[in-house]
Amino acid sequence: MGARLEIYGGTDRLGNKEPVEQISLKAGDSLAVVGPTGSGKSELLADIEQLADGDTPSRRTVRLLINDSAPDARVRASSVVATLSQRTNFIMDITVQGFVDMHAASLQKASGAWAGEVVSLANTLCGEPMRENSLLQRLSGGQTRALMIADIALMSDAPAVLIDEVENAGIDKYQALSVLRGHGKITVMATHDPMLMLSSPFRLVMSEGGMRSLLSVSLEEKKCRATLSALDAKLLYARELLRKGGTVQEGYFA
Amino acid sequence: MKAVIVAGPPSSGKTAVVVHMTRQLLAAGERTAAVKFDTQSSAYPDLYRERLGIPALGGMSGYLCPDHYFISNMEEALAWGRSIRVRWLFIETAGLCLRCAPHIEGVPAVTVVDCLGGVQAPAKMGPLLTLADIVLLTKGDLVSQAEREVIAFGVRSVNPAAAQYPVNGLVGTGALGALRAIRALDDVASFEGRKLRHDMPAAICSYCTGERRIGRRFQAGSVEKLYVPEAGGKGANGGSAA
Image (cartoon, rainbow over all chains, first blue to last red; front, side, top):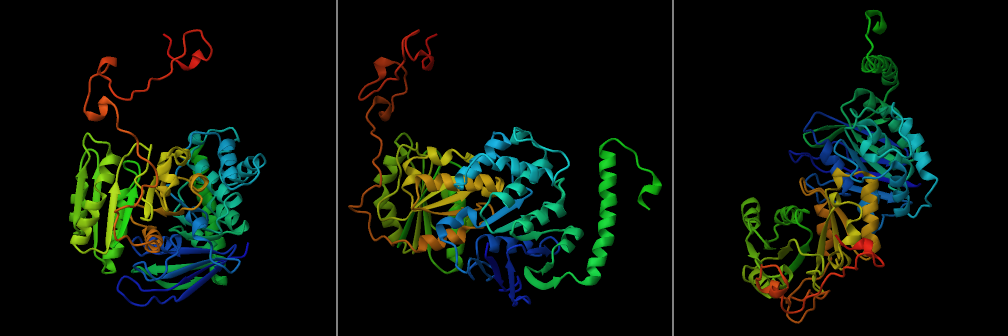
């Protein structure tokens, strides 16, 4: 998929020109958007979602090109930029199989084979496996997020995915990111999680509503990522152990 | 003047999207007013006045069919807009029974679809949706991407010509795209002689004129009865034979 997302800087909340003038992302790229609460992360995601044209408060311009041309307004509505946040829920009362089939039909994809694939992918993201005949409304929070991500990766035609802080959802977040990237999605993710910030090759630092700086993960940071990853694995292990009713002992986490 | 008819089911977010579009217009220095047609309460014109400081009118249909009341007052609404010299006039109408649509030929027709209404909603909305120029999908941030795509497909299936825009009624994301699309539609000088895009339901029985009592002897005019098959007869499982 030859998709490209281009963001051209506008002004921050104080009316100053944004230091980051241009960002260009291609299929499979991911960008972590970082900054304290109120720094402008969600506004940036909103600018991307509505493909701002110098007409939002930030004056940014966002262009999404598919094979070098802009998508038709009629197909733009829901199928160019996919979004996922903590507030996203399933509202249908149906099995996972029925849900995936319905989505496939709406995209004019042949039904039948998709559900199995989506479920297997979702199950790589979440500790508690779901089945094709599981009911959507009975899925846990983690299973729900996992299914949404697998569905976006495999089924949705949208070339770009916006993720707003889904780190606490009980899924393997790094795997989730690599699944989306592996399926050629351009992923832009607002996050407070240090590991996720370092898992994206690029990160955009926000403050006062403006794009302050664009950093790429350095060699030094890659080493730090490995150290943090080991710490994170310990945390995850402790979590699993305690959730299952186990007890922890001092030597475990040295 | 740009008159825009905004219609949709109750609580789907019509006022919210008009508020966000109006904010954009006011920021661009364009004078805007709103007329709200409703069946029960006309509290919302106050909301327009208080939140946005724009002129607003409210009309309550009371015992009249809200669609008949709406269409009988279109010219008055437009004349009011002209008299206060606004560039934009949003004419919002709520509720409706989905039997018809308030949309008028040559007048920008916006219909709001609530994503929480479920994936079958587009198929059930009838002319209100099929005859719209622009469809605004609200509350999409609360449902999964897949369901959003299924709803968008449902809308496309019944109205392939309409442009669809997701709008978040709480924070206003998406209102801009909708506004850009509405800008591209024609201005309206007068409603006189224009046609509704769909016919309106007939108001022809005693209940149309305020009757409230139940029973055959209170029913006058054109009355149609539910078909109830005889007990034990063919197709009886649909009727209430008990």
